[in-house]
Amino acid sequence: MAIYLPSVVSGSHAVFFDPHKEHLPTRDGINKPAGLITNFVKGKFEDQFRPHTRLFGFDMTKPFKGTLFRLPLRTEELSRKSKLRNKFYPKLEIRQLLQKFK
Image (tube, rainbow, N blue to C red; front, side, top):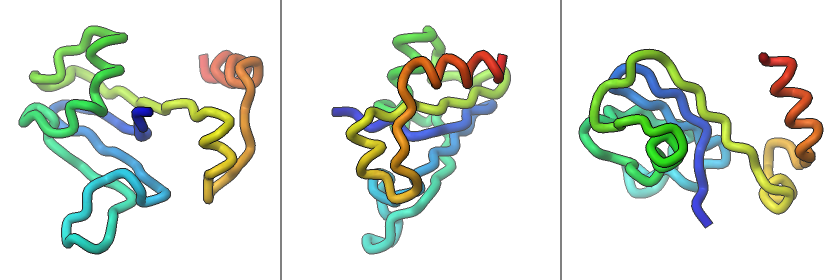
C-alpha cells in the first residue's frame, strides 16, 4: 500500500509533512524528520507525485505555476493507528467538509 503524505507544491519545490516520523528518509541515519522540503524538478520522491501526474496530468519535471495543497484522506485502518487523532471521517462527512471549503 502506498503512503501519500500531505504536501504543498509551489514553483520548483515541494514540502512533505510526516507528523508520525515514519515515512521520510533520515538525514543522519538515526532521526526521521517530521517534514522535508525538496526541489522536485530534480526528480526526487517520484512516488509521492503519482497522484499529481496520473490524476491531474501535471508535469512534475517543470516548475508548477501556482500552489497546490495535497491532503490525502486516510482509511479507517490508518486512522486507528494515528498517534495524532484516531477519529475516522466517513465519505459523507468529508464531502460536507469539502463543500465548506468550496
